[in-house]
Image 1 (tube, rainbow, N blue to C red):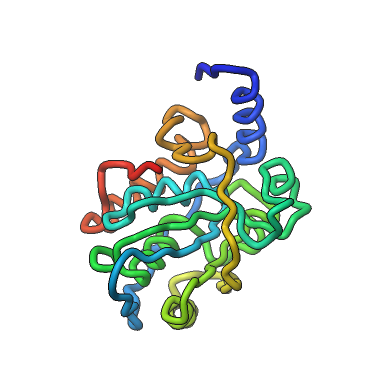
Image 2: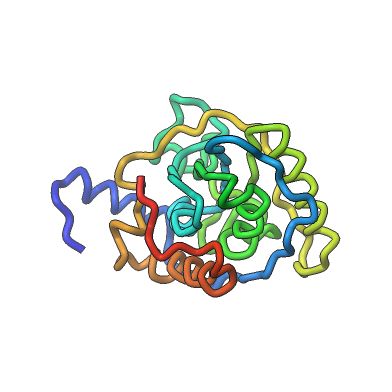
Length: 225
């Protein structure tokens, strides 16, 4: 990959250092269709998902029909600590997260939850996802409305009762706070860096699983920011 300018080169070097080399394949689980469907109406809605390195979370949701944008950022901490150097060190309360804007007439919040737990995040892992370890890579839901909160609680309960996961489900619900957008070089990372080793090993398989498991929700085009 050819970098232009020392700042971008250093930034991408730091990025690849945090989202580390792959260690083992992630599990893909056909999460159940939600019994408690969301009843969001009107215009566009937003939702916040933390599920490990935000490159893959953003990449998958950017291929979901009805999603109009997916912004990588930092959620759970202060504005002062919302920068890559601090968050990736693990000393903040932030998690790498993605704010998804979507049209509920095309894709419902409960359908986004199903995609999230099927191909993005392993809900049985605490403070880690894939090869990335630390509280900054925790999987968590941050509902931004009472309706999302009710749907998320019902879906987690349904998942726990399903028996589809061999280990206990530890993903929880966090209070929605400001999501501070990550640095520009993190946005649309998979789109801009298709040959990056981490993207090819960890994130492209997630997008492929989305297409295979939920073809009605899959969009071949990447919804960039």
